[in-house]
Structure formats: C-alpha cells, structure tokens
Image 1: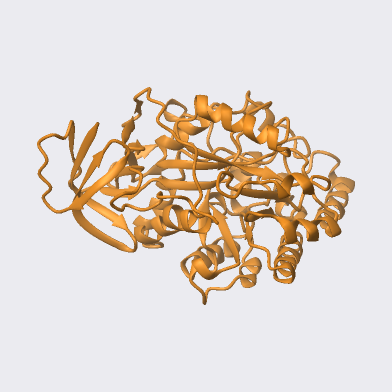
Image 2 (image 1 turned 30 degrees about the horizontal axis):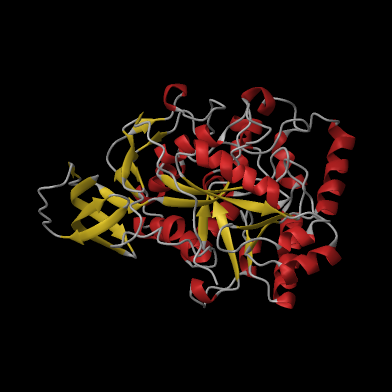
Length: 445
C-alpha cells in the first residue's frame, strides 16, 4: 500500500514547510517538493492544511480490564485516533491493577486484539511490589506509574522508605501523580464537618489544594535528586509547582521533567459553577492565574509535555454528590482541537503544540521511530484543517461514556484524517475498520 500526500503544510521540528509526503507500507519513504510517483495507490491533496505527526499521549485511562462500562481499549483508541492521537500509554489503575508482569502482558494481549492506536502500558507501583518493578523490561514497557496521592483506583504509595527503594531501582522512567494525602484528608474533614457529603464542588481546589500538590511534587523532585532517578511529574495544576522544574537544559539532558494536561490549560475554578462535577479532576482545576502560569511554563520549557489524562466515567457516576462523584473526564478526541483554539488566539504556536504533544513524548520515553515526520519513520500522520469549525455535541462524541466537558463548544479546527502505520484509519468522522496498531518499542539500553 502507498499514499502520496501533496501540498501539505508540514509542521515538524519547529518549522512549517510546504511539501509532499510519500508513504509506502508503514513508513514515510520520502519528503520533498513536487513528488511524482505514478505507483501510489492513493493521492491526497492537502493544500491549505497542516500535516502533523500523530500525537503521543503518555497518560490515558482506557478502563480495561474491569471497568469497561466507562471505556474500553477499543472505544478509547478510536476516539483518540479521531482526535489525532496515534499512540497512547495507558495507566495501571484498572481492575485488576497492573502490578505484576503477568497482568501487564495480559493487557498487552488485549490491546493487540482491539487497539486502533499504537499502544503501551505503564506498570503500577505499590508499597509491596518492588521485586516486580525491578523486572520491568525497558525496551518493551513505557514506564512506571506511582500514585503519591490517592485517586481513582486507590493505588496510593505512601511509604517513603519503599518509595526511596523504588526510585533507586526502577529500570524505567517513574511517572508520578503528586498530591499530599494527609493535607487532602485534613481539608476534606474541614469541609465535611460543614457540608456533610454534599460539599459544593467549587471547594474541590481548596480540598486538593495548591499546598497538597506542591508538598508532594517537591518531595518527589527532592527524592529524584537524592537517588538520581529519572522522574516525570504528571499533570501539574498549580503555578507554584512550575518553580520546581528547570528550563536551562535540553529535554534529552533533563533527569526531572513535567507535563500539563489540556483541562488544566483550559478550565479554571470559575467553571465549576456551570460544569460542576463534570470538571472534577485529581489534581483539581484551580485558579485562572494557575492556568495562565501553566501555559507560560509550557512555552518557557519548564513544562515539557502535553497530555490528556483521559479518564472517563459515566454521566450517572459523575452526577453524584461531591464525595461520591469520581474524578476524571474524557479528553482524547478533543485535545488537539482545544489546543488549536489557543493557536487561533495567538497564545501558542502550532510548532510548539507539535513539539510538546508529538516530539517531546517520543524523546522523553525513547519511543522508537515515531513522533516526527522523517524519512524512515513510522507513518503516523494527522491531516488537520484549521479552518473547519464544528461544535461538540452528543451526535459527534465518540467516547463510550457519551459526554464531554467541551459539549457546546465550537472549535475552529478539525482533525480530518489520521494515518496509523501508513494506513488511513480515520477520515472525516468515518473509520476504516482496519486494526493496524502496533506495540510501541523503546530505544533504550
């Protein structure tokens, strides 16, 4: 199979060039102006549209096994592909939790059968599985996930002696969810005393506070420096936390990195009045100033990676009172269109969206031959129309849970086509029922 994409505005490695891309089988074979290849099976005129590498989302929850009423690897990966995400790394807080090598390989087998986007999984750390952590294969597993604050799935690791051993001995990048558990418990007790279980959701960022986030993140960074561990701090939600991270080194030389998720760049505490528990995440969406500082830190390279933390729940679950409504929401389908709104507003360059959502996850996790538009690389490509408005509604939401925090929002940009390993899988809200996804490989010693 071969495809010739003509006249595209190629966004790659901080440049935009007009050129053609020739795909043969699963690889990008040639990038040049005015490519003429008569044997191409398909030719696509991409004039006026952006061609970007497929995004690599290093943090999703596709809920399989055990929680498949919310999402599955199949439904989540289809929504991701429709959103221009061609590779994902899924989290271990499923049922059962991914905390043994046997359970990890069972997940890989599920994905082999049902995933539509390229896939890998994070292994889950606990207070008592250090020996299993030591057995992680760096070439075949994305990394290690540690919950330093409790969240959906209750995988809290709170023994700091154990944590120090994990930081010393993990053979792969450690990704952390950082919120201080004791601070959260104290804050929850204060609000429960006043409101009972029906705490107004506007107090969520006061319960899962700046203090809780900074205390945990700073401890993790301190421990990483002490043990020389490779640390990646997930989903920063406060401006204060950004002070913990360095922007003087290139990403390849950083030992401690961080990321921000779409919802912490888009929403603020002012949105709780309208959205309620639909924007209840852990860590919490906080102030407008936090949101703006996070965006600036992303642009200043204190924050290295964009991600979604896609974590769907049913509407029935989300519509419960505060203490019962789970945290998390669906995001993979709408992440790139949301980021493109900031592009249209002049808040971020499309080159920087690509850097943080495509290139940098590939660099940070040593993903083999993905994340860039380069000859010889896997043809994971996204054709993006920046002048095609659409409004998010129940009719065009692809998540199994059937809702989105962006419902009613009109985006100016639309993902038109997504290629996975050289094959056109998604084309203007239609899927070609071809499973062409592959297990991610990692170029590590």
